[in-house]
Image (cartoon, rainbow, N blue to C red; front, side, top):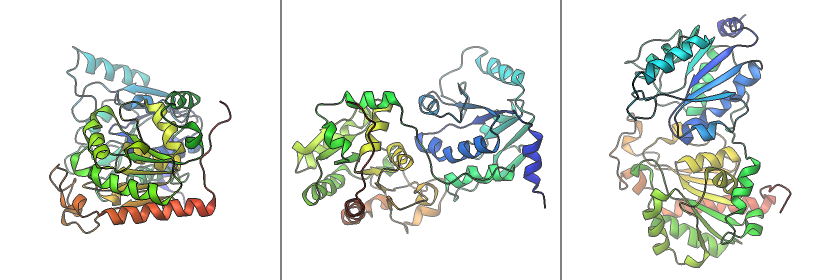
Length: 377
């Protein structure tokens, strides 16, 4: 029997022009990478244009599965929220319609804003997701708040006849990333980094309701430094996370073992550092998704965002820790106030996180796991 989706794929032709709308944060983008890979394998002659935010564009440009990256104009619920210049939005859509895309994919939520945006691209075929308040596309799936994000986009592609090419997220490490990481020494000990002997701690997350208290991370890190052969703690984050970093530094009993890199890493340096850590402790945030995509062992604490949507699908080297029975878990979107003391975060204990971290560090020692650093100084 011929799947109806295969006829959609065949209708695109051998060298189709495909536009994909994908905004959000780092985790949102990385959850789409298995679908970018599947699409590239199924339609090797396709020219893929990603329409995204200014924040995500540098990350997206790393991927050979994306031939072009465009910044979405200011548009409600889609692009950066700056006021558009006169005629900017219309000029953008007129240019896209002139390109005559064969397929436009909406990978940006349930569609109340993103479906109208996608329709205005003027593609021959449109596909995406539809909530109750969104206009339909040519092909669409219901937007289910309780579906894992990686599987969501693979499901849409399968509707069109594209089969998955694995479930792993991926994140390329570029030569420039290594150069930017080397520039952090000292105080970073590069030999220890190459040996995977740093414990990474990333305290940030986009919402307070996803930030486990820094004092609890400090207690976990102190115990791991006492029990395992670790060179120290690499404290990671953007400059806006400086207050949480100061809380961590005040709480730790081993301040001399902490290399404070908060606000000091470029995107490239962060990618390289994450790829070399022996273990990362992190909230449900961009760095935790990056670590998973890089294959770095990670213990990830989940707050208001449901781990059913965001926890790693493959768990050999990744451990989600969460209060799975918090009553707000099944509300949509997140179901609780945006504050650090929400019940789902408060319920995650130090011992739970420490136990998961011990398991991974012990496995690493048993199996002789260590990261790979490129040859060179």
